[in-house]
Image (cartoon, rainbow, N blue to C red; front, side, top):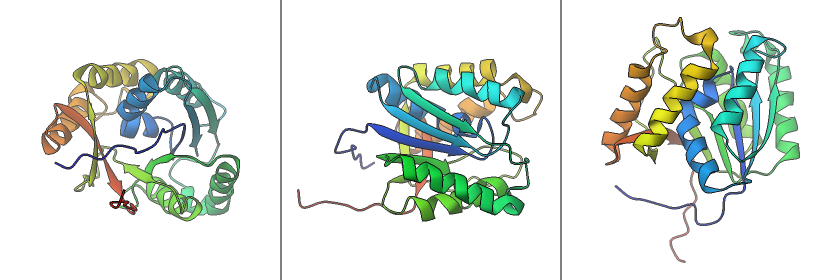
Length: 216
C-alpha cells in the first residue's frame, strides 16, 4: 500500500452533496479526521436539496458536529430531490458561485459513476468547475449496488469510525427508517475499505486526476 501525504498544509476544503447527509455518509470520517488535526480549517459545503425545512436543520447540526473547530460555511439549496438533471442550470450556477468564492486545497464530491442521477450530475459539474484541484469522490452505500473499486483511502481510527456512525444516527432522524441506514451498513463498508488499505477502518474515494511531483 503506497502512502502519500498532502505535501502541504490543507487549509481549505470544499464538500458538496446532492442531498443532506450525502457528505456525512461519504466523507464524515475524513472530515472528522482533518478537522480534529487542523483546528480552524475552512470548510465550504454546498448541498443542492433540502433547504428551508427539517432536512436543512439536520444538515446544519450534523456538519457542525462533523467539522469540530472548523470555520464552516454551509449553503443548502431547495432543488427537488431526484430532479437534478431538470434543474441543471440552477445547480451549475451554485457550483460556479462556490468556485468563485473559494480556492480549496481539497474537494470532496460524489462519484461520476454513482447510480443516483442527482449524485452523478453533481459529480460531473464539480470536475468542470474545479479543474485544477484535487477532487476525491466519495461513495454512498445504497440499494443500487453501485460500489466500485476505489483508488484512494483515508484510514479511520476505530474511535473516528464509531463517532461517525453515532453522529449519523444522532443528527439525521429523518433517515432512520431507511433499511440501509444503520450501524452495520456504515461500519461494514468502512471495515471492508479498511481491509483494502491495511487499516481497521477507512473511507474510500475515486481520484480521477492526480499530478505527481516525484522529482522533489
